[in-house]
Amino acid sequence: MRISSNQQFQQGIDALLRQQAKLAETQEQLATGNRILTPSDDPAASTQLIKLSALSAANQQFDRNIVFAQNDVDLSESKLKSAGDIIQRVRELVVQANNATNSDQSRSAIATEIENNLYSMRDLANSKDATGDYLFSGFNATTKPFVKEGSGYVYKGDQGERFLQIADGIQIQVRDTGTEIFQKIRNGDGRLRVAIPDSNQGSALVNLESTVTSLVGTYSIEFFEEENEPLHYRVLNEDGEAVVGATLYEPDQQVSFNDINVSVSGSPVAGDKIEIEPSEFQDVFTTLQLLVDKLKAPIASAPPNSLSNHLTQSLQEMDLVLDKFLSVRSSLGSRLQELDTAKGQNADEDLRLQRSVGALKDLDYAEAVSRLNMQMTGLQAAQQAYVKVQGLSLFNFL
Image 1 (cartoon, rainbow, N blue to C red):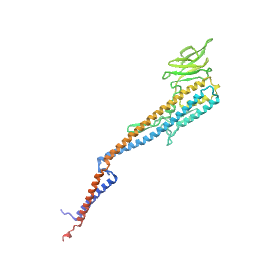
Image 2 (cartoon, rainbow, N blue to C red):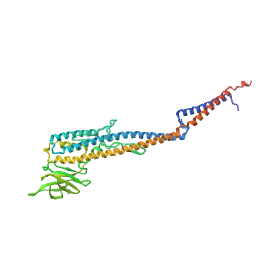
Image 3 (tube, one colour):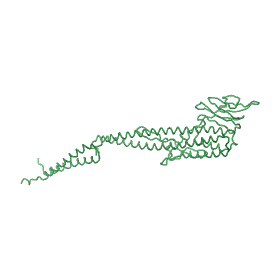
Image 4 (cartoon, rainbow, N blue to C red):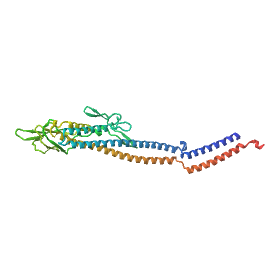
């Protein structure tokens, strides 16, 4: 077989190009610190790197979700702390108002301060986050949650509870609805409530104690007098049936029925009633507004001790509001702890993924430098061989 001079030259050039390509690849590896520059360098490792990259991207998104969740939960907790401070101040004002020495003017001044606190509570319930979304509107984040309609406030948000994924298979609630925080609060003592009709003419003071968890139906303690008989009372259910028959009333007497104890003091008169009703959900705005209305009414226009009975029950309702806010804040605190834990676990996962990527991708510099020196030597040898081949000619033998 005859080998032409052109073939010899081409083989020499090809050898030079191969050596230069290998040298360039090694130089790029040293420059980037990466062992794998293209998938063809190590297909198996490249496949694993793609999977690890996806896991790392997901973990970085979890980290961003954690920061967002922490900001949201922190903001909600701050707003509820302020709301609790408002209720605590209202409670102090109720105690101050429940004093027989107060004039109508002084009670009206207290009512004005409570009304201002009502407006502050409304503003807190309509709080926004840094992006302008409402905190307590559920999924309707652009809708103001509480709007004044008639004599009360109506919730315009929805019942959607926002969750964010903070780790693989783990989601956490980041926002509570306005309904859950500001509306699902029971009146009375949380189980029962006392209602004193405005038609009462006596001065009965009422204190309610009960061991029942819930009440079915309503009951009425009715005071009456028979001819030439002292004041009596009886307890009727909502069907008008006697639960407690006619009993002589004595001051500071305890009326007991169905695990319900009602302490009655003062001076009720015939025709007066004390109604015991099941506790119902009552939003915090209604609770405050009823208190304002009661304090603004002239004392002479209400039955004796009517205001005192209302204020006593209002103290119980303030405590229930505080309990509600503290319960939600406790839940928020637990979520913050869970977020801190997830943040630490995600940091550990980031480190593990980085190590796994490094084990597959990072360059062994000692091996690469040794290989570079060998490739440079090989390239020099190829260059010298090409020079010698290039100089060969038949004219050298003539």
